[in-house]
Structure formats: C-alpha cells, structure tokens
Image 1 (cartoon, helix red, strand yellow):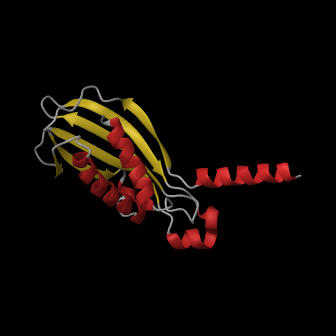
Image 2 (cartoon, one colour):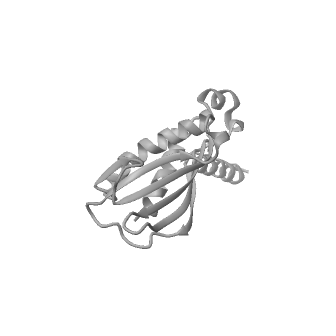
Image 3 (cartoon, helix red, strand yellow):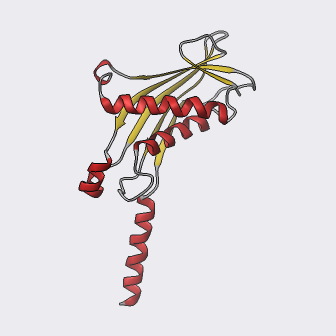
Length: 172
C-alpha cells in the first residue's frame, strides 16, 4: 500500500512540475537561409493580424510586450547591432504578426485555479534582406505559460518570453 501511495505522490509531483513550466512550438516555413553577418541593422515591425483584433486588449498587450522583448533581445543576443522601430531604412526588415493572443488575469487564476487556462501568444515571423528583397526566414512561433496559478511562469510575460526566445532561436 505504501508503494502505491508513494507512486501516486511521485506522479502528482511530476505533473505539478510539468504544469509549472512554459512551453511552445516553432513551425518553420523557411528556416534561416543564410547567416546574419555581424554589425547589421533591422527594422522591426510588430502588428496584429486582422482589423477585428486591432482593438482587442489581449492582442494589444501581447503586441506591446513582443515589441519590447524583441527590441532588447535582438541586440543583447547579438543577432543585430541595432534595432529600429519600423518601418525605417535598415539592412533587414523583420515583420512579426500576432495571430493569436490569450491573456488570463491573475484574478481569474486565483478564483478559478487551473480552470482559468493559460496565457498564449502565437505569431508569424518574416525576415527580409533589403538588398534585393530576399526572404531569408519565414516561420511561426507559439509561447504558452503554465495554467498553474501558483507558478511564477503563469503570466503573459512568460508566454511572450517563450515565443520571443523561439524567434531568437529561429534566427540563429
């Protein structure tokens, strides 16, 4: 009986740990076809996919956070030497289009626990080299936070971080 109870506790603990982490995926339409040389600049445009989503608060929040995180990460990770908010003249144009945004408030997590769901951010990424308008990368990413309300990875920022980390990996 003790072995069964120990086994069930181990399974429950494992599921709790798995439920406490972010996740996501990358779907490569066109993987990076050539390396980005050092010292290059990029014009970054982050937008929303359809007109009906333009006024959606969740989409606006995710779009703002994606823009902030990518602006910093593209330089700090050494992908580009400068990032300009597009459209501006640069060596590359990067367009990130938010296709799906699901934001669950902390209050909903508190009152509804696991039933509140998770935060999710899905986007399409396209990188174009401006000398000849050559598409060198085209892919989709998704970032999902945990649905576990007590986790430090349950917020919108964690879903966006997961998605932007996947964008950075797609550009390496």
